[in-house]
Image (cartoon, rainbow, N blue to C red; front, top):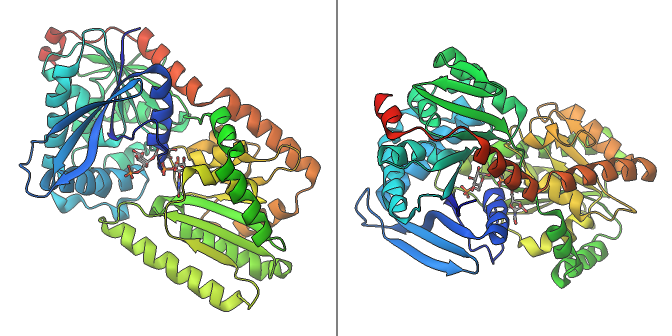
Length: 469
Ligand SMILES: O=P(O)(O)OC[C@H]1O[C@H](O[C@H]2O[C@H](CO)[C@@H](O)[C@H](O)[C@H]2O)[C@H](O)[C@@H](O)[C@@H]1O
Ligand SMILES: O=c1ccn([C@@H]2O[C@H](COP(=O)(O)OP(=O)(O)O)[C@@H](O)[C@H]2O)c(=O)[nH]1
């Protein structure tokens, strides 16, 4: 197999810990295979020229990092405006939060063209290119237009909504047409693949030309589900290290008289945080035996703070937590510990292990790696219980979790109560099945399966085929 070239908006030095599922998963993949990781450097040049950016190439162990600076204007329209102001809300089924009027599509296209221009000269003929996520959907089409004939795969880390929602995006035909420049398009769940199939048949009059293969715009693309996993062994190793053990011990000591529940999320409206907090309040109302005992530790890691909807959710959450602590809290017990910052990854296994229940209750989520990390961190002899939203991609793979509909406040409170009361035997049984699943379908399986399928996918379209399209 040729060299692996990974392209994503967010990249991180794979030798260091990163927050955010994509950076964590790709760092772990590339550390193993070596190769080139190309993406945004994280630097915004205040007075930079739109469509231009300096590229910094350096070695990080076995991985070459190629990091591109972006001008403020480009970053504003590509990342904040279009990727996170239009695509993120719509792909998470939130048309109400999408800002279609913003006119940021031009910046999105410009940055994708810039990525293609800077990446193309670094490519070798037998490189396998793997492009990630909604920021970079048109990148393969831009590379093909420059003559790139390498195999190119794309993986969408977020959900793909049903066709009527997708079709609300003014440029939806252009976006989906761009997906036909890939040889393989990967999704987190079978539901997402179904949505893709329905969309391309209805809106692009694509023909099915094989199992999960679609032909339109003079090109053929294969679409499959590759649910992303975690590196279970590595996460468990992290759990045995000093920082995690210290975190576990101090948490258990500090809360020795409490039953701990935990939530760890980026502060994002897709994560269902206000709904979760309301369900916790309902638990205290409907099952008063939990007062003075149940404590929810909610980590809300700051995210995309320059996008309006993210400020709104922060204020809503702060006011909800404050009112519950005010209404129910006492001198010796506060129901919610709200932590508005990123907790270092090395401390998370200890925190997860100290908790009886994890609340992973997004309104919509591509996968949710926290659900898998919580399971990996548990003591197999006395494991905690995972409460999981049916709307997380992880739900397809983790049926032994206690499933909830996060919109149903009372129903969620009932399930949390069930989790708090579950017998040791049932906890062990559910946990063992969950652990087996996340071990089998770990991040290495995800990477292997995607790259194997990409290697076997149809040959890339020739320049003539592309020009004819
Ligand atoms: O890069 P940011 O804007 O700071 O956001 C962090 C990442 O959030 C999203 O993560 C998704 O990927 C996870 C791994 O596949 C998945 O478990 C989760 O459900 C998704 O939300 C986003 O898709 C990434 O591009 C961001 O880097
Ligand atoms: O304070 C925090 C919050 C999150 N994370 C990590 O960020 C990732 C979040 O990934 P997930 O798939 O759950 O959601 P995303 O943020 O990518 O939407 C997980 O690996 C978490 O352990 C972290 O290290 N510290």
